[in-house]
Length: 300
Image (cartoon, rainbow, N blue to C red; front, top):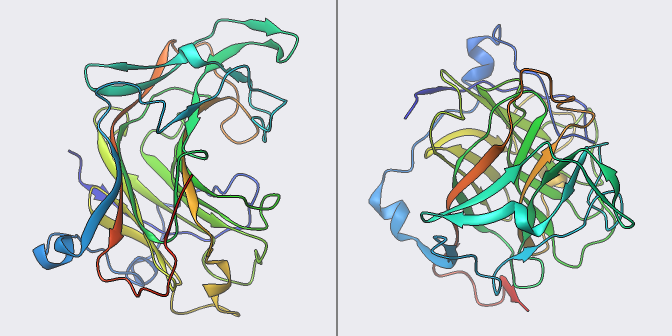
């Protein structure tokens, strides 16, 4: 497990929810939000599991697997080059595998696509408002790779009206960097808080890491391997309160592995295939003793 050096940045890039990390970030900026590790047993004891999958098999009562999904059916947003096919996701030795291959695919629905990959979500089975959302993932490597673990609102309006929470996004040409984002219609360059990120001292594709968010009515905090690296709302330097960014509807889980696009760029001759996003588990928690008048879970 690599020791992570965490740095923060705020930029204007809503479409990709991305930013560049600058090694020259000064200590005063880094110290604005102190890193913390959830090791206190009393903190751990406050959670109860509301959803979990350890991938002994592909449980289709939990996951909706996308098939023949590309420029249609709302699967392409940033000029990605893949088509999502159901046979690109499978379980191997207790792990969920989303596999990207450079095998072309044509169908009347998808047209000609140069890469095959996978996407699945819980839109039809599970969503939750507030709580802790967590997955243990080994990320792929190589230019053009764009895996993500993220949340979208159940029954939401057109993006970004009801928000989006990116727990982890990763582009293969920056193998030591992960990205996190909270986006919604209140996006404003003068408001602190839309984007954060973390940098590791080793490639994030070398081993599994635990990526999570803790989402409350007043804040969202991002963690890697239990260490907090970003939090909304930040406490200083903001013209307007970043609480406007905080979503309030139940959100469902998404795992996907895009290839190419306006942010990661295209795979190069050095990018090897197949590439795999490997998920050890996914868990969602709810705080115990939540006020009874606050609706939290939505199961369909």
